[in-house]
Image (tube, rainbow, N blue to C red; front, side, top):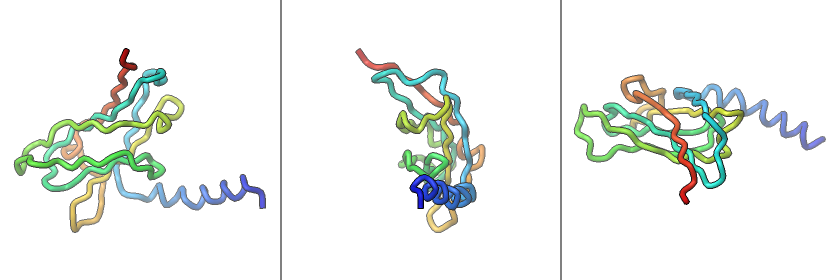
Length: 128
């Protein structure tokens, strides 16, 4: 069997599984291509999530990072956290990220708008 046919068949089988995964999908536009030496970051403003964690992945399941607030008083906003974004996660001027709330002992789910208040993309130029 042709290798490209096999790869297409595998992707077709995996696509429904990725689409049915819990989480909130966020699409961010990239204002310009990363220049040599530049870096991209995802800035996530996290509200009150207690002892839960926010997992960030690409929509195809590639792990990007985990936000695990520590020492935040119960009921208080956790703050803004930055997670590095690999350049190869950007496609066609956009990046699609899946955010999942992981509360220990509970099923993973999409975070509410109060739990993840804002998600932005930061591009930093290369340092001289």
